[in-house]
Length: 193
Image (cartoon, rainbow, N blue to C red; front, side, top):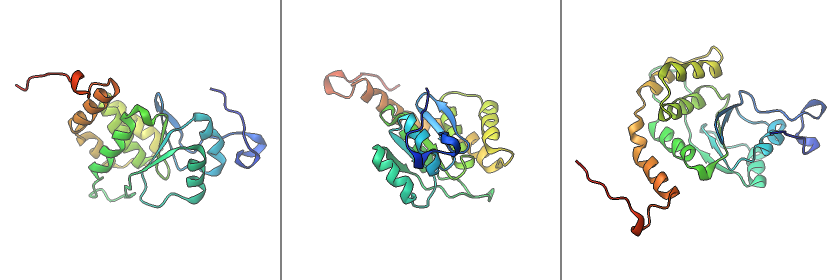
């Protein structure tokens, strides 16, 4: 994909279009980053985003909200407090809600971000990787790479203990809906044993 500058006010120095800090591709149609600033709006426009998953509790800044509205991008906010306390837990319901957005291809392309794209984003991506059946060592290596030496043991414990079976019903509903299996005449029959 070649990204070209689209507007003087949204370009970086020398007309360059720059990604947000800590930007990376998670999967086809799923991206991660730190908080986008106006200099990265041209880059984000080039991705053709449909959705943004924002993991901070603070209100979305007006400039960013205006950009999303102008581009027709839907904002999903899951307010997870940024916390260095190893005894504070990450709200499982927020992670599950965000994973539902990531699993719904109608939301793609989607950008996941928090303030710096390290800890909250790393937890969500780690749980997403567990759904993809990644081994823990690979999940933790990716987390460390984006955390840039500021890994949090509490985040790693959360990812390790996250039970992916809580997403089973959500995934089945999405699969059935995607394949149009929820119509009464097309429902799958199965036995519970």
